[in-house]
Image (cartoon, rainbow, N blue to C red; front, side):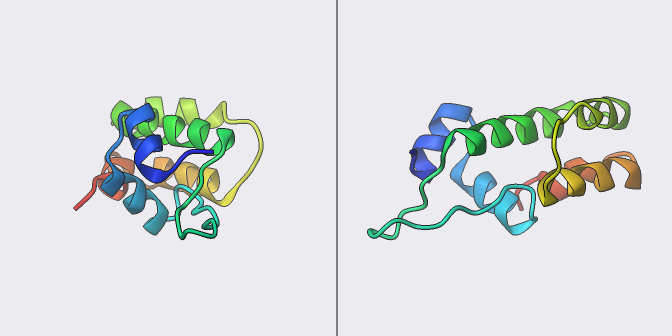
Length: 98
């Protein structure tokens, strides 16, 4: 289990970006432990790497192609698919920390 800081360091994403992904519904926010820290498991690491890869793609065709290969269904991935169909640049707009 990783803290948000450890997750950010491991994936190369800022803590601010992770919180932004929570706010946008792209990454599920985990429960907090008894100390109040968010604790991320392996699937959260994979999800964050996928989000980072899709956001960096910045190309609607690439985003749609990558999203179509995601196995399983979750609100986060349904949102990514929705954004990829919305308009070019939508995913970048949604995932860019402000």
